[in-house]
Amino acid sequence: MQGLDRMQSTTVQMLLAARLVADYARELGADTERQETRPVYDHMGALLADSVLQAGLNYNSVVRPRVEAILARFPQCDTTSALLPVVGEGKTAAFLNWTHLEKIGRFESLVRFLDCNSIETVSDLGEELKQPRFVELLREVRGVGPKTVDYMGCLVGLDAVAVDRHVRTFARRVGVLNEDYDFLRSVFCCAADLLSLSRRQFDAWVWRRESSLASHQIEFSF
Image 1 (cartoon, rainbow, N blue to C red):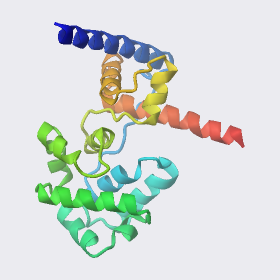
Image 2 (image 1 turned 90 degrees about the vertical axis):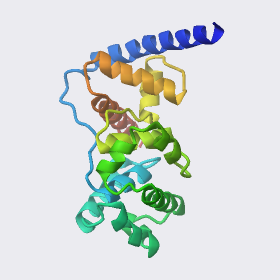
Image 3 (image 1 turned 120 degrees about the horizontal axis):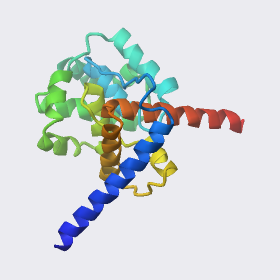
């Protein structure tokens, strides 16, 4: 009974937090603004590059230009098998236009993981990301946590929320202090439902608003 009581308590807390988030987002116009979502790729190289590079970097000035360059320069690298020579011949740094070994290694590990699991196209990846066992295996890749998995889900077109620093900042802004990843993902998914928005739309709206505020704060500090 104690376990059931804790589950019920957590569910109530999640619903209350979701209402706080949804009400504040509605005050800011989240349910009436023209909604943009994260891109959906049909190019495995661009998707993996975006997924690997986005953590800890400015998306608009660092990540987006590199992903756009990949789409323009390497249109043929749209499948996992087409990425294998890039990895095998040591060309990942040039492909990503990035020299930091951690992100290069993560990209290469993901390519090998997808190849070992017969994931050839973005469509294949989208189907597998719906399978809990595949998600468990994916999270065993070094450096791949729940946020990266959910972010990849957004990029293949799944209706997901990736709990990043912007989501966490927005949550704290309305007094939601629970930092647990799964709790916050449930809160923002539920808030999107309350706003009658897709979760991808709400995720993108929060990201756009908070990243804009952060940029203004940086400019003001100078």
